[in-house]
Length: 192
Image 1 (cartoon, rainbow, N blue to C red):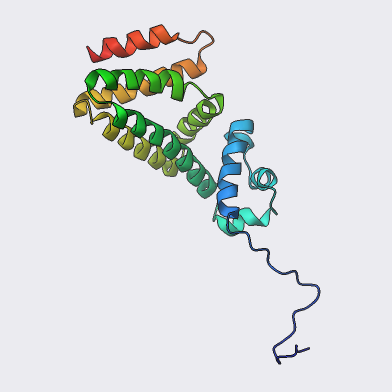
Image 2: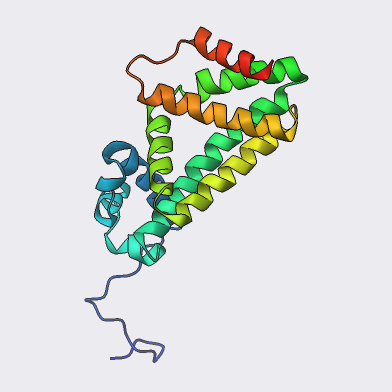
């Protein structure tokens, strides 16, 4: 069958493609939601598609593998956290303000959202097993150190970055997390 222009007519049984330019981004956001809700072990193509409210085939259309979806999702998470870190350190006018920015970063930003804590812990655990995700954590660490080096020498920035990660993980997993005063004391003590 041909249409009025002489071109082959589309079969009535074929559906027109739905134009959805934001679908890939929605899948990445949905992957983060699923990881936060179900953990990495419960994150599948099917669950991501369900959370994004798209057909299951969309995940394999936009991503070659589940590992690729996870790498993109964790990169988005790490970039969002690093952006806050950059903003805090850029706003600090001197070393004293930078110390206060680090304290606020740990107590308000990194420990402020249970969802972000879960995503961070899931990323660290996954990165221990998957080299592609280790690359995400390495890029995140490099960006954190670069922000810290605005106010601290490279060796101090590296140690401070490790302290920040340790304090965040310790508090995320503790049944008796450190108070704001204890966090402040630990950071001040390190930076003496």
